[in-house]
Length: 538
Image (cartoon, rainbow, N blue to C red):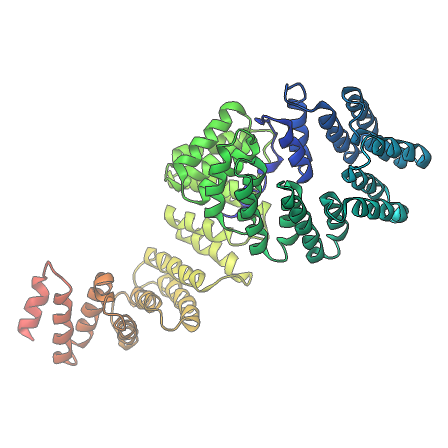
């Protein structure tokens, strides 16, 4: 239940920036999170510390990636107005001209961009990237020319070139791309700079090849930039993607202390806290998000998860009602299962069944939901429906040993409701024996399975003990006796077995019967006068 799937809808919710500082927007752009970058850059554009020319350039680049050329042009023009000597807005306008097929105009823009500082080889890398963004095949020569010049002029130290080459290589050869990003990190390290873009791209590219190395690189990034929201979040995400939910939860906790985080991050954190069993803390975060965003359906889902885990079924029902009445909620099968559980635990069985059936309808590829519905019927005392529903599941070719065991238990419950001595009781018990035998065939050394078989046989025989029943309990004891601690752990099971075996042998083998009665008293601390009298008489 506590799987990634439950939290998959989180990132689709709205973003509300709490960031301070436009540089975090730049970092997020370079990390490929354009929606986050755009929110931060727009929210910080008028801050005194903001380099407006740079911010407008990145806003324009985001517009280009979103296909909004007019908005991109406007932002690049705002950037040149803010600082006529900032080169990258001219690169952006050159890219727009390239996209329009106006190569001569593009070259004029690129020439102007490189005219302000002949030693700025990063601008040459940006020009090469502009050509690459528009058409890497058509402009292959121009890309190579600018890359070679940047490397030559920088004496092979321009990190931006290595990042670009890594981007050009990543799809076909992630290993080579990671090496190029590593080169970019190294070149900037010589200048006492931390190349945040290269760290993130290394991790993203290499994660699917070697998650451990990718995570180690992000841990290094966190050491070098301990206050970076980007570093903190990327490491938390990679822990999460690598199913290291405990580490992800801890890292997200650190990230939440950084003012440069988003509501969507708090949502993920609430889900991770649930996964880590920190239900009260998860509720605290979820309620905090809802205070700012009352229509956030994901938080109602998390609250329902937490409340079910805390056995607060009335609270879970209330959270589920909020979730289901939200017109924007993207409902999943598990929502119906959880709500159904909340209802069934409160005795609202008829309503619960409706939601379980809806879950099955929404997710026919998850037939195991039928086992949950069967358990609901069993709890409600409707043995007929419990058996019928479980049969739907097993007859479709599903089921593991535990499902066969549960089916046998369901049939015993049904048999006990039939009149003693009736054919209906015999038939139900025989069906249960069939399923428990299937389970025993899979796991022959499981004492609980043999115990259930003995109970079914006793039910079928109206508690008349025969050789098959005796043999079944003897087999059960032989399995449990392999572990000396089982006698205390399963004391009631031992008592039942010894008593049954004593009764079986009492008429045919009195010494053996006496032996089992004595064993029975040994595991019956409160004593049993009737059995003691039986022993005395024997």
